[in-house]
Image 1 (tube, rainbow, N blue to C red):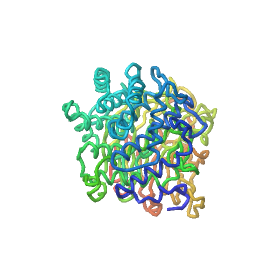
Image 2: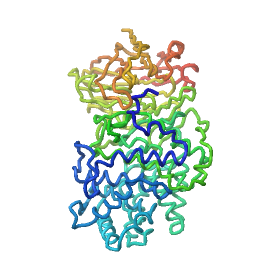
Image 3: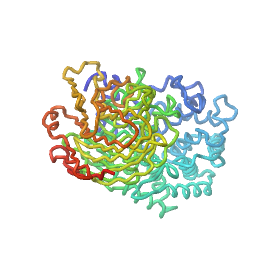
Image 4: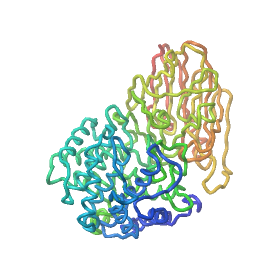
Length: 628
C-alpha cells in the first residue's frame, strides 16, 4: 500500500478484524468532527459548499448522520466522547427556545431524511438516549420528531423514514403514529419487483438504494417488530435472503464492489446490507461469510484516499471529487456510510464476532439480474467483476444520470467516468458509451432505452438520441473481451465515438507509471497498459479509426487521470453497422496472449456472426445477428 493513498489517517492502519477494531474505527472516523460542532452541539458545519437544502439543514444532516455510527457503538458497549455532545445537541436541537433549534419542517424537506437517525438511535440505544433525557426533554423530542407524520415525503425510499421514527418512538414507550407507519409500509409494497428487488419509487431505478435503504430499513423493522408484526417481519427477511444471493455478485474477492448508480459518495454503505442481515439474524450465508463481506469492504474503502487533510470524509468516490457528486450532497452527506457499523450492537459472544472471517463462496461466472437490467460477469482469477447493462425505460433528473445508469458496462476495477461538459471527447469522458455528434463536437449519449432485452448470451437495447436517429445496440458479455454491435439508422450526418474502459495513468502516491505503454493502429484498434491493468478496443466491422482519448482530470470515479481507447467514425444519413471488441483486464501481464484471442466477426448471408474464443471470454462464444 502506498503511504499517501489513504490520506495518512489513523483509521487506514486499523486491521478491522475484531469488534474492538470496529469500535475504534467508529471513533477514528467521527472524532475528527469534534472541532466542527456548534456551541450548542446541535449542528455540524463541515464545509462551505452546499446542497439544494442549504447550510442550516446541512448542519443538522451532519449531526444526525454521525448517529448511524455512534448509536450501535454505545448500544454494544463501546464509548465515544462524542456521545455526550450528541445528547447535548438533542436537548438543544429540539428546544424551540434555543437558538440552535432544528425548526419546523414542511413537505419534502431534507429534515425528513435526517429524522430517521433519531428513530434508529432510540431503537438501538434507548437507555443511552431516552433514559438520559428529562421528561421535558423527552416531550420536546417527541414533538419535534412527530412532525414527520404530517409531512409529505417523496414517493420512494423516503417513505421508510417515518417508519423508523415511529418504531423508535414506539419502543421508547412514547406516542407514535401507527396509521402513518402502516400507510407507508403498504405504499412501499408497490415498489417491490421480484427476487428481492425493489425499484426506488414506481418506475424508478434499482441500485444501491435497494440494499442500503429498502432492505436495511426493512431488516431493522423485522428485528424490532418480530412479535408485533410477524408476517411482515418474516417477509422482509425472506426477501432479503433472496436479494443476498444476487447482490453478492456485485462484490469482488478484495472487498471492492461495482460502482453503479447515484449516491456513491456514501461509499462503504455498500456493505451495510450485509451488516443488517447479521443484525436481523438472516443466515442466507454463514455469519463468517457475512463478516468477511463487511470487513473486506471496509478495508478496501479505508485504504482509499477518501479523507481530507483534517480527517473528515470527503465528497467523492475513491478520492475527493465534487464533479461526480449529487445536487443533494452536502459536506456531511458521506457519513451515511456509518450505517455499516450496525453489527457493533451485537454482543462479543455473537457468531458474527466469534466465527472466523470467510471468503466469498464459489460464484457462477455469469448471473442474469433482470430487475436492475444487468448481467453480472466475473473472472475469479483476476478479481474483475462487470455489470453489463441493457438500459432503462425512464430516466431521472439526478446529476450525470446517463453516466451512472446508461453505460454499456460497469467495472469494479475501472469504475466509470462522468462528463465535465459536453464539448468534445476530452470533456465528455465517454468510456463504455457510444457518443454521437452532428459534427459540432457536441455529443449525445444514451439517456434511456426505447426497449430492451437481456439474457446470458446477449443484451439488446434500442435508443434514440434524436427523433430521426434510432440505435440498436447488442452487447455480448465476457471477460476479458466483450463485443458491442450497433445498428445506427440516421436521418442526419453523424460523428461517432465508441469508448472502452478508462485506464488509470498515475498512482495516488504521485509516482509515475514507468511500465505504461500505449499503441494504436489507424485500421481500427487502440490499447493501453500499465500498473492499472490493460484496456483496449478494436473495430471488428464498419469503417472508422482508433484513438487514445485522454479525458480531463477527475472525470473517473476511481482514477483522477485516465486514458480511454476509442474508435471514431463518421456516417452519412442511412443505415450503418459498427462492431467493436472491448478488452479489460486487471493483470497487464496477460496482455499479449489475450490480445491474440480477440473476437472475430464475419458477414454470412444476412447475418453478422460473432465468435469469441474460449481463452478470450469463456462465455458467449458465438452469436448471430440478423442484418436488416
